[in-house]
Image 1 (cartoon, rainbow, N blue to C red):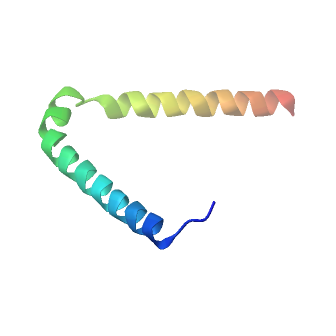
Image 2 (image 1 turned 60 degrees about the vertical axis):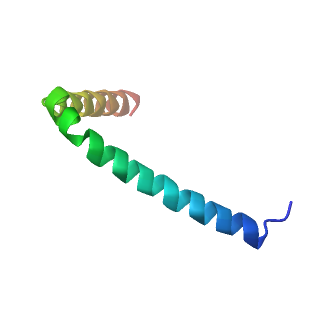
Length: 63
C-alpha cells in the first residue's frame, strides 16, 4: 500500500483539527473539572506510591 501526498495532507489536517478541538474542549470544561475533581491529586499520588511499593516488593522478592 502506497501512502501518497494526499494521505499526508489529510493526516496533517486531521491532526491539527483534533489538537484544536482538544484545546477548545479543555478550556470549556476547565472550570467544571476544577470544581468536581479538586482533591484528585492526592488519590493519584497515593496510587503511584502503592504501585511503587508493589514494584519494589516484587523486585526484592524475586532477587
